[in-house]
Length: 309
Image 1 (cartoon, rainbow, N blue to C red):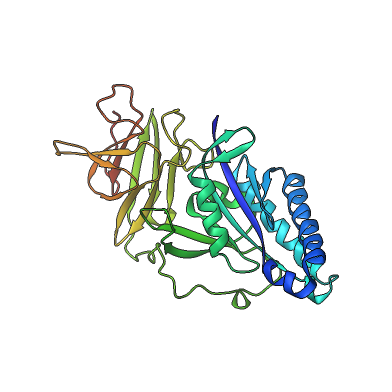
Image 2: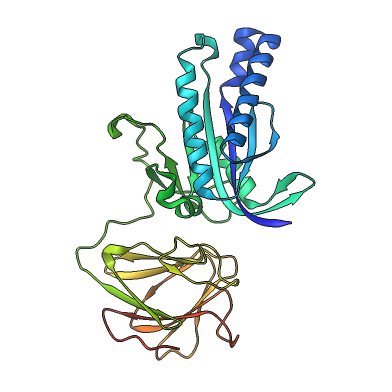
């Protein structure tokens, strides 16, 4: 069965050196107990432990907000525990989080999100939580933690770079004391001083967003600013950003987005791609305009009147 889930990989950082310090028997006992604690914490926070991986845990959550909150809680609890442990046992934890469709087969799980979460766990430093942009957007503010944009990164096995974030789980710590990823290019350009406005219409409902409201998220998820209740629309289908005095539409979906500009003979198809919105037109989500019942938004830039499809 395929379901939309959020995958977490929690791994004990530096466990290999523990065998040299404590010897095989004592190190195995310490890592086994810590791995068990990781799994218990995942389950106590509403997740499901799929399997343990020697010195780590693979878990699944039904929603991204729960996953992010659980992993922030896990690292805070671990930090509090460290003071009570002898120095050789003071190991760190690193976490990777990714959301997407996951296939459950006989209790195990497979899918792109599983692979990405594993890669992020490998890339994260000790005491860090790295998450995909999809997970962060799905989690929203409900997770009650700040995020730091790490920019675009190439991941092994992915054709295109992904925008990644670091979950800042530490409490009562000044931002300047946290690791800065200044060397990484950000995917989000500074907002322009020139203001813009975009209007949408969907089934008789008109909504207007200013450039200062960006990013605007379109999808089936309840927290999306443009919530489109249609099964062909992905939970997080598209994002609209303000870039260089224009609105940029980025497709994030499983099946694509089509844009038909006024006066154009053929639509522009987006598949994990982006285009600048100008003038006015229509946006089909999940299926093309050739499908009579396609979910279609009408849009217009800079305050012109919006017409229903």
